[in-house]
Structure formats: C-alpha cells, structure tokens
Amino acid sequence: MADRSEYDAFVTRAWPRLLRTAYLLTREWDAAEDLVQTALLKAWLAWPRLGDEREAYVRKIIVNVHVSWWRRRWRRAEVTSGSLPDRSQVADHMGQADERELVWQALGRLPARQRAVVVLRYFEDLTEAQTAETLGCSVGTVKSQTSRALAKLRVDDSFDPMIARRS
Amino acid sequence: MPIDRLDLQDLMDERSRPAIERPAPLTSLRGRIDRARRRRRAAWAGAVIVSLVASGTVLGLRGPGGSDQTSVTVAAAFPAEYTESDGTVYRLVAEATLDAATREVTLDVAVRGKPLAIRAECPAERWPPQITVRVPESSKKYRLTPTPFLDCHENRAVDLMPLPQGTRRAAVTIEAHNKAGPERWRFGVYEWTPPATAKRPRPLPEPPATIGTWRLLGKAKGTWPATREVTITVPNTGRPMALVTYCGGDINRRLMLETRVNGRLSNHRVGCVKPGIIQDDGPRNGYATLDGDRKATTTVKVRLVTEVSDYRHRPGLLTAAVYEMPR
Image (cartoon, rainbow over all chains, first blue to last red; front, side, top):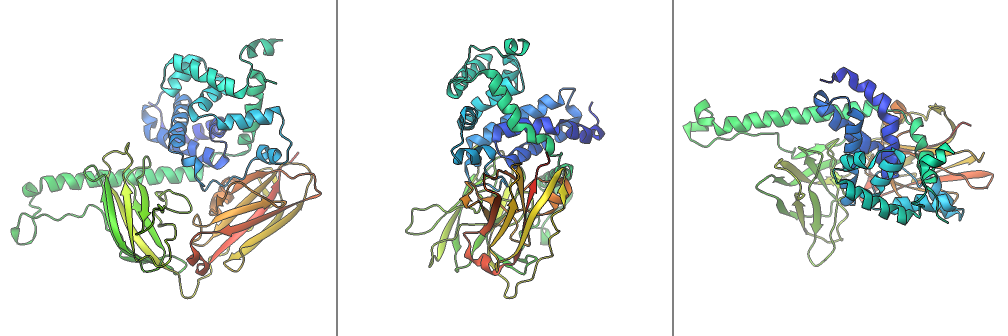
C-alpha cells in the first residue's frame, strides 16, 4: 500500500514530466497545470490503492480528462487561462512560420484523441499496447488514429526513428 | 515537404521544455486536496443525516407536537444577503436544487436592472450543470461570464451576462450534465449592488526581482476603475520574455485582461488572478511567454475588460510585470 507521506515527493519528482505531456495536449500552460493538478488530486484520493505505476496512473487520468474536456469544448471558450499565444503563434502572426511551425499548428488542430495518440506514441514513447491501455481503447483503434493523425501532420510514416537514432 | 517522426519528437520535446522551469505548485495542490477532503466529509455527514431522517421514527426525530413531519436541514441555506470585501451587497433572489430526481429546473427570476450572479454548492468537480438564461422576446441564450463555468473552488458568485436593458423577468435554466451522477447541487441566484463608497483593496505585493531564474525587466500598476490599461516598455534582447499579471480586490477572476504586444492584440483574453499563486510558486497563473520582434523595444499593454458595466463601481488593482528568461 502506498504511503501518503510519499505523495509530495512523487508530485515534485513527476511534475515536470506530467506537465510536458499535459501541455502538449492542451497547448496552454495554465490549462496544462490545471489538468495535471486535477489528475494529481484524483491520484491523492486513490493513493492508498495505487501500486508502483503511479505515474502511469496519473498520465492516464491526464489524457482521459483532457479528452473529456475537449469533447465539452471547454477549451474553446475564453477561459481564464493566463496564457497568451505562445511563441509559435506570435511567430506565425509575423509571417515567419516554417515547416515545424506548420506541424505544430496542425498538431493543435487534431481532435483530442488523435493528439493524445501522437503525444503518447511519439513523445512518451509508449508502445501501441501501452497507448491503448492508457486511452482505454483497442490496439486497432490506436493504429487507425495514429495513421490518420500522421497523415494530417504530413509526417513521413515510413521513417523509423529508431534507425535514425542509431545512424 | 513532409517531416519525419524524429522531427515530430524533437518538436514536441522543444515546445514542452519550458515545463522544466515551472515548479510543482504544491501550495495550490494542497488547497485543492483540502477542499476535496472537506467536500467528502460534508457528503459523508449529509449521508449520515439522510439515513437518520430515513429512520427518524426510531430515533425519535419528530416534529413539534409529536407530528410525523420531520424537518432536517442537510446543509445551511444560501445567505439571504451578504457583503463582499469591497462593500458589494449580494441579495438572494432565487434558489434551486438539482439531484437524481430533478435533472433540470427553470427559475422565473424578477430582474430589477441589477446584475445577476450564481453561487453553487458543488458536490463534485466533474460534470457541473449548465446554466442558461433566456429573456422574453429574444432567442439569445445568456450564460455565465467571463467564463461559462461555476466557481466550485472558492464558492463565489459568478456573473451572468448582462441582460438587455428593460428586462423585467428572466428564465434561469439549470440543467444537469447527462453524465452527472446522483449528487445534489444547490444554486443561489443573486442580484448585486456595488458599494456607494468603494473600499480600496489591500495593496498588492511588488513583483519580485526574480522568479526562479527569470529576471524582472519592467512593471506597471493600475487602480481599477480609474486606470483600465497599463503599459510596460522593455528593451528587446531577443531572449524569451514572460508576462505576469495579477489583480487585487473582488474583481479577481471576474474581469478579463486583453493584451497587446507591440500593438498586436493577443488572440485570447485571460483572467486576472490573485498574486499569491505567483508569489508562492513562481510564474504560474497569469504567466505567459512573449516573443519580442525585431524592434529595439517591446511594448506590452494590458487592459482590464468586462461585459458587466457595474464593475465600474467596484474597486480593484492590477499589476503587470515583464520578465526575461536567462541565457
């Protein structure tokens, strides 16, 4: 059984990683922090029941809460977000958008579930099975969502990052 | 030209990297945990009372005169009237409850030309009810403002969008989310009157010289409603900059901020938040990264805005500060 006295240390340790994931999903720092805090609150309530996979548990909550928020279009309203357009948006406005910028913008236009698949697969480096487990869907759904998302992002699907890293 | 997956990975790594600079908001998180624990305790106490009511005869919980009518108040009612710290008086005009049996309720509210606001007693954070207001001879739906969400954290009244001039009656509809559980939500519709003499809020803390590794470049302060906009001009060194804003007084989270950077209006309005969060945890709420352009200086204008005109009679403070990221 997990000890609640370990909770603060866990939060401090895991916060930057979780926040990065949440930011890639929400693209607003305040919304991302709100999302991570929401997930950590749920984790605190379930803390005694959590095993060693605490971070995976919190990440799962982050992804699924984000998808439900997105469904409700909360983030499309003018929320008290505290975030101005980030650098990329400013750059875009200034007509300095490059290819990476266009991909970043396209990533932001993906439906929440597809964006989550991209973040989990290519940022978190999860396997298809782990991604399916996190999202609570089948591996087949992960495959199809990934394929659709990469097509929209104009990512070369044939390129294997592992080969690139080794070369 | 398509990019490859490694580029995609690098891009996400680069864009999310500032997370490393943002420490865990333990103070804020502990506050949320404490509120959740209080809600749980209250829900548990409510359940105990309800079970006592169910077995009231056995326990002798009878009404006066030995009648079988039992009257137990599960939670305190909304106050008929209360005054916020700036002197604004809130007066209860209607109440409603949603639960498993009642999924939607419409209140017929008399409008006397004063702004309306809604307070909620939230048993859960997920799936809060939706609130819409309609007025006679108009198809427009009015909602909460500046954001369409109830304030379940601080239990404060959230304003409704201003109704057309001359409105005498409004139908306030509160509808449970279709995924909401059997929790019992309570609502109080209030009208509010600004203070005849505004009480000046407590002064705001000065922006610190550094927040984490970020260095203060420039700051500006203003007193609402006399000052609606503050301007900060800072040298542009080409390094990333951050704008921190915070408000004092009861305008917190009720007024929004519009920001212009070198004359360019930001896409998003943001809420004005309390300074404590920033002071305790570094640049958090109210923090936004900015990019200068090729000009020698960057001018940031921050303007307080609201749909509800009566806020012109409520006092508030605004502080804005621009910080620069170290090399």
